[in-house]
Amino acid sequence: MNMNDADPFALFSQWLSDAEQSEPNDPNSMALTTVAANGQPSSRMVLLKGHSKDGFIFYTNLGSRKANEINETAKVSTLFHWKSLRRQIRIEGSINPVDDLTADAYFASRSRSSQLGAWASDQSKPLNDRQIFEDRFKEYEEKFAGLEVPRPPNWSGYCITPHKIEFWMDREFRLHERWLFERKGKEWQRGMLYP
Image 1 (cartoon, rainbow, N blue to C red):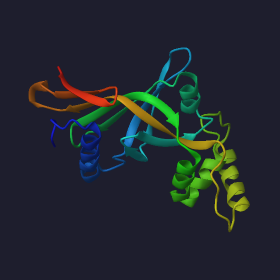
Image 2: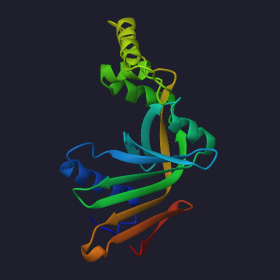
Image 3: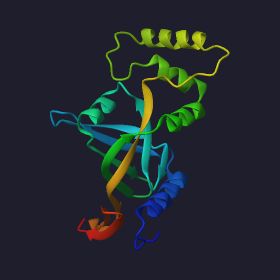
Image 4: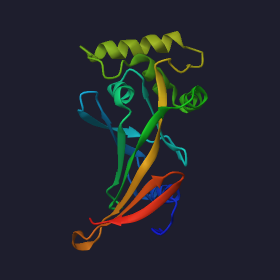
């Protein structure tokens, strides 16, 4: 790993690849923090489903709390933590919806059960009885029997365009190593931070 690399995306890709070899579950999981209109932050785990120099993509129900807060303030940060590697990456940036073609392509790649679950779930809404959710799932199984499952109109993705990316590595005696990349115009500037 080359911490002198001026390209934070190449370094991210290397660290994610390392995590895919060492993490027992979901190396692409990230803690996503959104902020409500009243200033209250909220965090949850989501799965990274794509990344490039354009940003970091995840998918969700557009009626979910996270989507509502994104629409209210567009303030997000995310954290990857890989315990087996003793590393983490923090990302702050702006966020925008992905285009329909991107959302359609990813939705088509999901398992059929996940596709049906997206139709059945009113994510983040109160649920009085789990049986209601299971019954809705069965209804959509029947509705789409023998057919391709289309992407629900209330389900899509978001892309986080970073303006800060921080790489953290554990070191002996808590003398950890931190590198901060900040976007300045079209360029990235790199500097170290005290742990």
